[in-house]
Length: 192
Image (cartoon, rainbow, N blue to C red; front, top):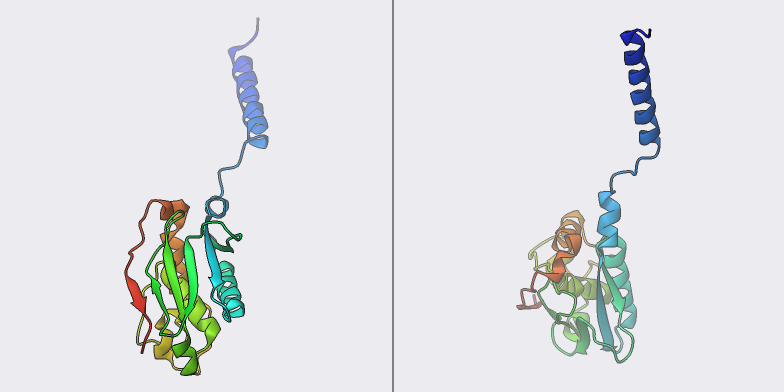
């Protein structure tokens, strides 16, 4: 006759073996960082009416794309709809306050009056795109704040959002939420 202690020992050993095998083949928990990059919102822009600003727009877009992960700006193919319309004007730069959502509409006006007064084109483009992504002006402010705009002076060429600005945009587009959050819609004029 077998002792009941033998059955308990065999049962414990079997349970431990099953637990070890299960753990070795377990599927890891989802990585939140991977999910946020998978949920990146893509916004298309059309700069076909911003002649003379192409390099500044490309640099401004590259700055945002390098500094935020859950929203990406891409140039719209010719003839396709874009959420952000970028045009060159003779006045002061201005833009629709977002966050613009996929299928929505925002307008960025890159005004030559600011350039004539000595402001940096790339900073202007990145700043105005920041409005489309939901950032208001932070005037007056230091050069380290992209959204301080013209208040930082004509010597400021910073076109990179600071940590607070990046965080606010990341939050606005977290989990693709921009698709459900309407844009503010106000037009912000960046005159001094």
